[in-house]
Image (cartoon, rainbow, N blue to C red; front, side, top):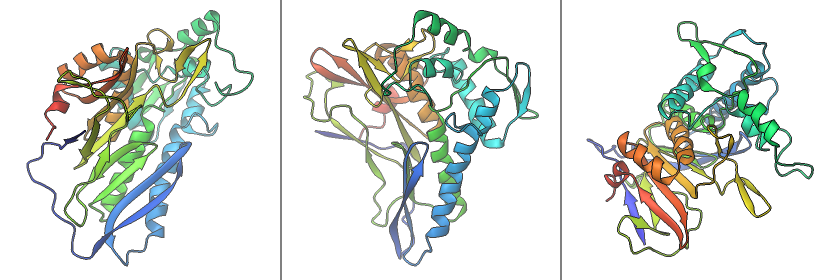
Length: 345
């Protein structure tokens, strides 16, 4: 079975000019791959366009990577307590929004949870998939938890500065890919490309339509595509969901992407900053549709931490279009927020 999601728009996008064809570009970034499909004339010289895309993504890495010891973020994380740092525009934009989501989600998403991410083996060193990795002790978790707390971060919007309160380790991996997608979209638009589909590590943003007038249709992620259907009306197991990305973004957070098992217990890479431990509430994934991919990326993480019941209630209250896939005794159950149900066609 298949269902389609179409955003509510006042004016459908115009078809590209005659002679436009689909070009595909791709590359590597942030430990994953990127790809761009765009509509342009058949004679369009693509290497400068590809380089411009790569430059935008390289900027995100140079400013916000915890894997690069020379990045602006790594310099901040290693800075002495009380020091102030003037941030580049991109870094400040992402951090400011990350702190807003942390506040609005009451800490379900917290960009200062990097010490916990590292303790559980999902950071740049002492990885969960290395032979000598062991799960953290309670003492180690208490130490990591003491380093966290988005409320500790002070920013000065006038100077785009942020203070290192002392031993805080910011990790923007749950938002940076989405921001990178948005930056690529802006770069394409500035270069006269009005119809495209951008993908970075599974996070997506579409604009305009293809030469045949069709939107950029994408299938939303599912941890088990061939599961069986449920009899409940708003709870569906295994139904394929495709979305038309008219000026729209999609981001997914799932516990099946990166995890390890120890003594038959699954430890997800999604850490609940409030408890200091990987989520264990049965939510397999949550996909958020939003105008901005940065927002979709951050909110998919926040709702994923909340879990299906609390996350669905929050999404309904705050008009977030979200698809929750939860594990049950019968397999996987899907729950759609009211804003997502409004997009059904």
